[in-house]
Image 1 (cartoon, one colour):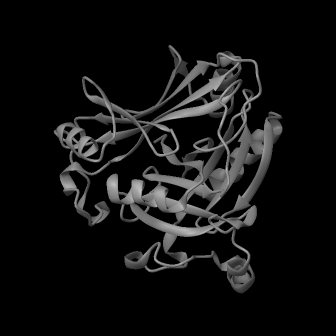
Image 2 (cartoon, one colour):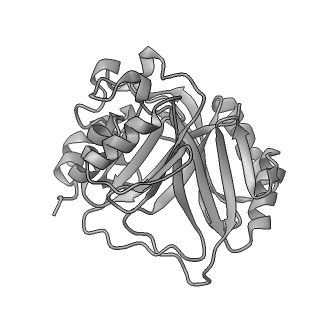
Image 3 (cartoon, helix red, strand yellow):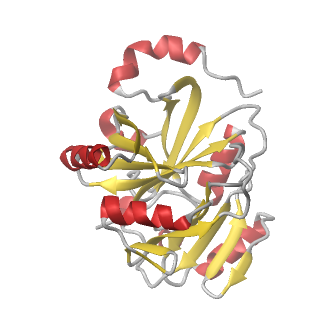
Length: 295
């Protein structure tokens, strides 16, 4: 089944980000690690109890990060699925926290601390299964069920539509690429010719789930054969990834379902310490000594 794997963004203040996504939204802090391209930069992962693919949102922590400018190409508007009968709970919870949200029918739209548009959509889905629920003050039958949607903004939508169709055989109908019954991508025209500038709340990339390493290598070979803009094929330890730039300029990742976040931490203690995948473990002292200071 086609589905999201995770979405990765940039944030400036780690404590503010952590509090919002764990204390308020009720996600679990599943991995406290580093940006593998820049070992001085922290990389926070949030998700369900197990950090399941499709439940995860991640943030690169960049102190002194400036404002973002979404112009000729960018990703925006992260949607989440809610279980049936939970929207009123979230309306009340956000209001009590002083967050102004716009309610339209079964949807609730509001910003995170970096100005990222989040959209909660009440579905007809059953509540999260017990093994994936997070221990928090949010009842299990109200907890988030996973990623629902994201928007691609590009200068020439048809080229991005053709990329998904030709490379993956994923068709787009009326600007919407349906992944499954509860997940989709919208491909929209950007309204500026000025260059985009990454900053607070920028979405660095969206990752789609791939069954296993064999399937990932097949995708890599297909991308090379069709001459798409391949950035890298790399192991992140927790999964293996293929990164491309779609024709509109946005970064797209394809990530394997495994091995998962328990390769370096026990399931009951995810996110409690700075975790490094096995291939970085020997560099721990140097990495810890050179992390970016918060201020």
